[in-house]
Length: 106
Image (tube, rainbow, N blue to C red):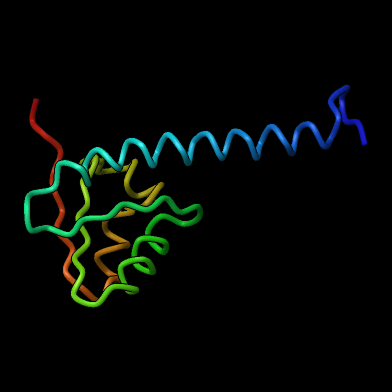
């Protein structure tokens, strides 16, 4: 099926490929933090697709005694009201500790 000169299959394939590339680059980025975790800490990073706060809470629930560590962008005001806060939603939904690191004051 063609739409506007582009094959439908090609568009779906390109979207899947783009998503896969984003997942792979995200995994590499997060792995740096796992590799630099302090000795004695058992850290792991996983890439999930979907609502961020739900994915974070669901993943943390799989491991008893886990803690969620998050960095925040520090958005406030209208931007936060319109888009919500992944950190805020995670804190409210998680049934375990959440450690939030504020943005640096550079």
